Figure (cartoon, rainbow, N blue to C red):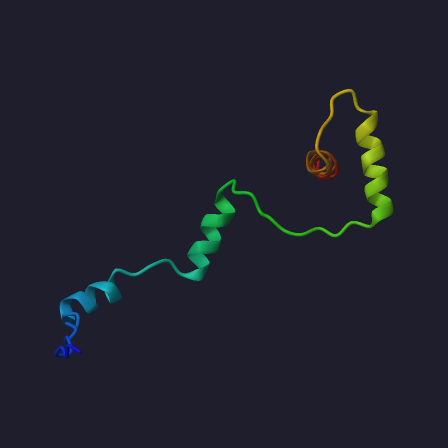
Length: 82
């Protein structure tokens, strides 16, 4: 069995540590402002009763052009908000 001397890890210099500390980042408030200003999608779970889903699917079938359930719901929400 070969025995090796334990390697000593080099610690970061004070300059490197100060650089990491001082480079900064965005605060929570800044992050929220960025999210609000962009047109990014927000994903969340929506629980819809089964009976309502059946009605939504029936309304989708009536259309000439097939669209996804998600798209149909977004259209309805958009019309309701306007």
